[in-house]
Length: 169
Image (cartoon, rainbow, N blue to C red; front, side, top):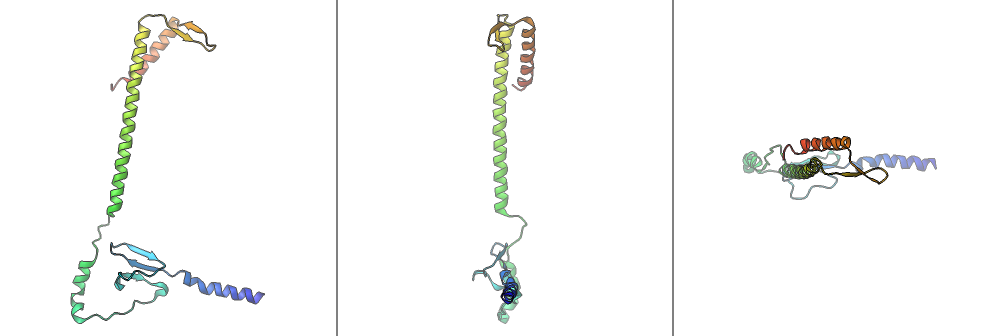
């Protein structure tokens, strides 16, 4: 039984490097691609950066005439690296625009609520200043006529609401 366990341990340790088989290449857009599968046939051999087991790239003979024009052709076919991802920049702009729109909508709703509070406070203040008897409901649910002290307190409260909410209106 111990021999079986030892053999199993040796087999597990020996097969571990196979699990780390990684391919790495540069795709047509100039981005590095990591995979456990080999690159597609459309990827040239010089774009493959890493092979599993650090195997060297297969040598391909180049014609002498093509070797002289290869640096120019390679430079022309290489993607221009700008350091910016266009899709990412567009997504960032879209998110920023959506956030700005949401913030603008919230500000409009807040302004609308302030205007409504201002209108209600002015109407209540006008009613309070008219001198008409007003009633309030106490904690027991009974109606009481508002006395001068509570009338003055309510007038101050309404005036503070008017001062706060009616500035911009």
